Image (tube, one colour):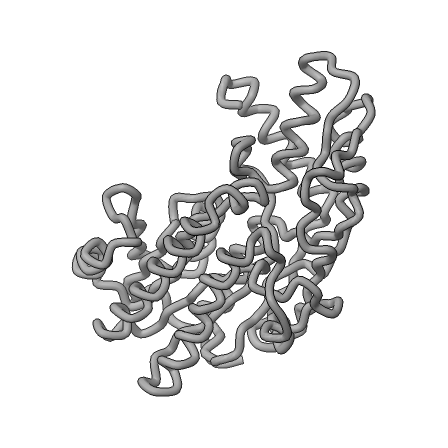
Length: 319
């Protein structure tokens, strides 16, 4: 690996830095020497608007930008608002990369999404398979908007020598996740369902689809470590997966969360609801080889921490 970027002498801007992943990433960056970190807050800066990006860059004077900010949600939210997911994510990323290049930003770290992969990708997903087909339909607009940032990163590197890298984190989970039932992803949605069913004495919970799809998840602190290591050490054109290489079916995941939360009722599957992509599991060889990253957190241990955190939130009236 190359000598690491000296973060102690750089001004770092983290879009989305106040969010779920962002708060963990800020801590990791500080642990690695970053002293001057600018975190733009919405609605002070609406990064869909070019003039707000101009103001952000004038205010932050960044040497390094890590672009976490995104309009995200689960399958339901993506089905309801595909146009918004496409437009907002594309406009944020494309304008930010372009204006960062114009202003001479030294390094740009673009965060993509696992939803960029084709619906039927050979397991494990290797980065070279990104262009082998169309993404799963329910989140294709979001996935393709994010994938355009890879095209832009590579084009700007080729033509302008702009040091922009592109990372593909798998689904995150952990303390601080979004538990809003309208927009949450599968792990917080299931944890909430199980805890609410317990509180209400319900005999069953209803889960979407038929339980057959598989997913890979990465604990949020591990993802923050991976992004930090890429920021420090990686300066290449190729996209890099950030994952755990641990695959679990939605059926097994649901039963595991029921066990860990203590929900003893039955699980009823609703096949009228979409399954989403059939399988997801990443090949994480590049991350290990390019910047020495491997996920460390045991899945069940990470789930327990997440459940404990959310129980505490509910006890404090924030559930």
